[in-house]
Image 1 (cartoon, rainbow, N blue to C red):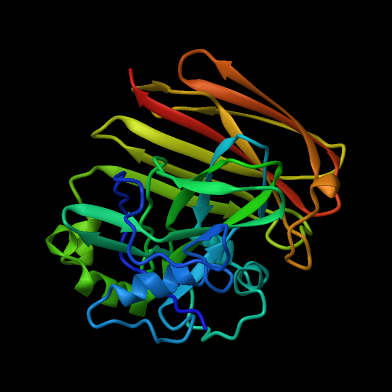
Image 2 (image 1 turned 120 degrees about the vertical axis):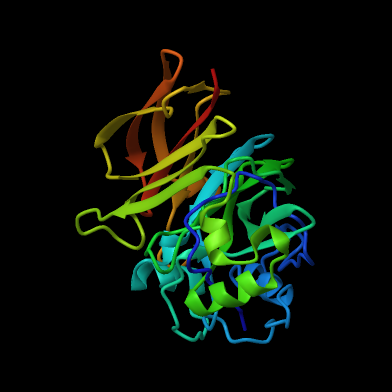
Length: 325
């Protein structure tokens, strides 16, 4: 049984990244903090509350937000932004629970975090699917968006991995909490976040957004989605946007860094699939997408995508990192 909580009044996002390891658990030899379809992200969050709520029924306080299957080649390193808005619809929640019983106490807007020893940790997990993938976890530097249950704003974070094996797929999960979980989480955090209002007005200066726009008659969870975070004081930002693709239809987009920032590092993207049976696609049957990214000046980047072959609903996540001029 999975446990999950949502934190409700937090709109700011500390860009202190890389989750702290609080009793991570695995579902298989090549997974991290996974449990039952990502439920360990919630269980571990709840077990660190005072008093512990690790025995709470899944959905009472927390619900994992699960991605689709993400393609990864041999020797590659990838980052994937994850939004609590994956659970925005009954179809999205069905993907996260994958048949598990749960208490339907949503919505789960806020990011599940633990603030301790001067650091803020989110609770993220991943598992591998078909193919010869052999992953290790890497630090996530993309930013955290707390979200807000009271303001109906979705929190977001992300996962980063390196593949030491062959081509295959992986998926990630993120702990998100509801208003009741938010209250318990806030009470359990140390002096860095003694009250939700403190977190909202945190001196980090972080602004985050995680929005969803519906795609016409789209299958399970295949929607356009924006998952951005920016730390104005530290002049850095991570911009991620997801595009729901249709076969043989080309989509293009250009994204720009916030004012006063320039592009840092390489433009990046991931390809994500959503099979109806929730099982990882075989590598030979994976969706094939032509993706071209192009740097634009010093502070922007563009992406051009065409879905050539697909047995499953397919999404491309385009990523742009920004920093101080």
